[in-house]
Image (cartoon, rainbow, N blue to C red):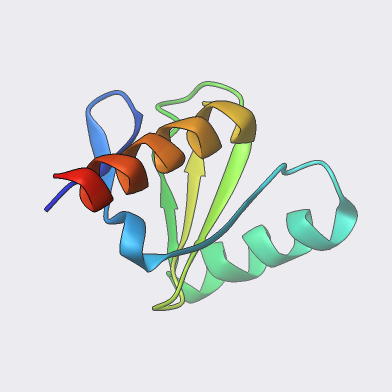
Length: 85
């Protein structure tokens, strides 16, 4: 099984990723706060500024300090390896 590296040694199962967004909009910020209160937020940014928000199919929201563009590229690489390997 291949995993998506979201920074600082943190890995996510790419099959569980629904979307990767930027955290700049007000609705996303409200959603992050709601998840923090519900206990479904995973902060994998290690104190750095959050550059992407990863939504999983099991209801968890993961914060990363890596940009959505970089994570998308890594996700595509993971899919290509999975299809070829």
